[in-house]
Structure formats: C-alpha cells, structure tokens
Amino acid sequence: QQQVKQSPQSLIVQKGGISIINCAYENTAFDYFPWYQQFPGKGPALLIAIRPDVSEKKEGRFTISFNKSAKQFSLHIMDSQPGDSATYFCAATDSWGKLQFGAGTQVVVTP
Amino acid sequence: EAQVTQNPRYLITVTGKKLTVTCSQNMNHEYMSWYRQDPGLGLRQIYYSMNVEVTDKGDVPEGYKVSRKEKRNFPLILESPSPNQTSLYFCASSLRQGANSPLHFGNGTRLTVT
Image 1 (cartoon, rainbow over the protein chains, first blue to last red):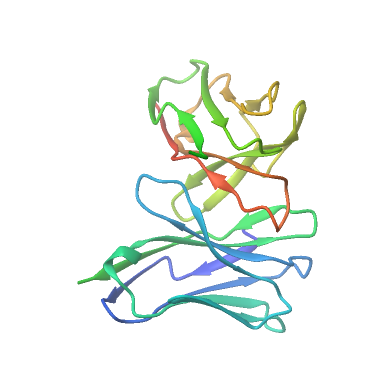
Image 2: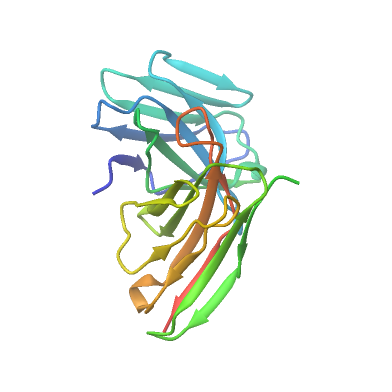
C-alpha cells in the first residue's frame, strides 16, 4: 500500500504551459518532502524539496506548494519546456529518514 | 566524477539461475539502498544498508539478498530469480539516511526473467 499517493499518472502540456502534479499522504510523521526527476535511461535525481513549516518553495521554474492541514503537496512547473519531459516522483521522509515514493508522473511537453 | 555505478545495465536470464547486480559508489557514502521500479508502483525499497556489515529489509525484500562487506559496494543477489522479479532496479547512496542527505541514484539495471 503506497503511503504517498501521486496523480496524475501522466500529463501532456504545451510548451510554455504549467504542469501540476499532486501528492497526498496520511502519515503525520513525514517531515520532509522531496521531488525527484527522472529522464529516460537515467536514475532519479533530486529536483527540489520542502519541509512542512514552509507553505511554498520556489527554485527557478519549479515550485512546491505544501498544505499541512490537508496533507497534500504539489509540484508546479511554470513555462514548461520540452527539456522538462521526464518522470517526476514525489516522496516523503519520516524522522528516521525512511523515504517513501509516489507512483510517478510522466510529463510530456510538446513543442 | 561522483557517481553510483551499476552493472550490468541490461540482463536477461531464466528462472532459477542465480544472478548478482553490482553497485559501487565513489562518494564515501555510509547509506546505500536498492529499489525496484515498476509501472504504477513507483520506486519500492528492497534492502538498505546504514554502513558496512549493517543491512536491513526494505518494503519488498522477498527473493533478494544483499551484502555490505566494503563501504563502496552493495551487490544485489537473486538466488533463484522468478518472472515476477522482472523489473528496473536502481541502486542509490547518500551520506547517511535522513532528510539532509539526498539520494544519488545509479542509471539502473533492467532485468528480465523468463
């Protein structure tokens, strides 16, 4: 049973558009929420992360929004580019450092 | 270059034939872990190691073994592979287990068991 539920499974967005990926969790012991980006033929790599004492974190075109009361967090990719086409995984870490991944979202950005 | 190296990248084998997937990291990381990636299921942890000679089960350990005799190496052993172990496998390492230590992943091993 997945402890972090991620949606959608896939999405197609036009160049310049906004990609939004949502994740939800139940375990209130989670205290760190990273996002990993995976290109075809490669392993995942850390993209951006947030702690629950912050409601938003922005790094370039990538923004995490965090809603602690709803136990939800999301990744927004602004001005999406073809080079952003990848699979994105949300994840959550508990105080022991154990990482739980969501199922992944395949993002395709069309030219 | 700091990296996690897995070998082989692709492997096709038959049911019951023992195999080993090697993993090596050159970053002096204490923590190493194996994941399998399956469509719709994301990345699931198989085994992990907090340091040399310290290993523990992850979420899906059945049918797998690991060892950590040296800090840099963390091989994954399938003693008697079965078709349900057909998957994409990733080795990962970090300085230590925890939020302040991002995972560094290898490029994966695609295993097919017929």
